[in-house]
Length: 438
Image (cartoon, rainbow, N blue to C red; front, side, top):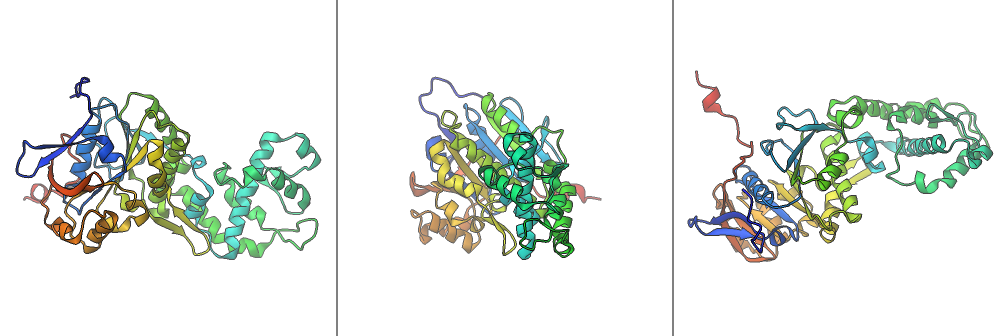
């Protein structure tokens, strides 16, 4: 039901004072989300219900909420003002949910390094060199016949830059001429051609004006990398990236959501597996896309909240070998920068200890359910200076649905009972009594 337009202040009814059900606790969105928010709690403590309740309260108004649903437990959110989309093939999908893709052009160079995990002193340089050559091939296809390439012709065969037996100077000059584009980590290229281009990079070089023939030893060193790249292309968990050209992109869903009357965009990632670190990389790519839109000023008139469920799966990850480590830090940067652009985050997690302190230190409000792990409670204490060990001692004893609201605008921790959401998240365990009966 809509709130009355005549109300002077927007407030979110999230619960009531424990044991006094008529003492409703209402929080203004500025207080709850203004300095970012975190919903913390062990399994069974009520974290998902709190998330659902907050979403319900927000969409009573002209809110803009992006929900990254890691497990699909919020799939019952549907109806007016709600859009559902999913990546991959979830076991259960929301009614009317639209399958989307995440095209490779949304990735940056570090994402591909994280996916393909080059190792050693040969694979990494060859991969980076191949990416640069493919960017050059794309430029050549778009500018073929212009004055520069007429003077400095290079050989491109079916999108592959050929070096074997060719003069070095034209390619070197082209790489220097278009260095700003070629060295841009976000510059697009045809990723499907990477295996062939890596082979094309393996040529003998004796410091002369021309490259010599194929270097079979280098090709051998790169065989494992090429095999991994091909495995990634064929993997079902990354079908939404490399084999979903006929599906609308998730970036299009964002753009249409921002320009529409919709208030909640739910992105279901339960169909994306953990192989090749696919979940972490895809979530980071989504976060980076939102951050880029924020930096372009697209949220100033439409303040937006990004709710990241099971946030410990996505934040603070380092992927890759010792030589080539990719830091998945989009949400960490968003926590540091997003507020000034009108883009705030709300993290829901059962493992606060797995969230980097750089992120938690930016959180202004915490809704803390039962926490039984000492390390989790220590993280909360460090991240929020207003709470001491004596005040946090009661956290393991909170009942399901109870939570302590802690933060800059709550100098004294406030224990409340979260109001049950109308749309219940599908987070219950197996129904043994129902299905095991004889």
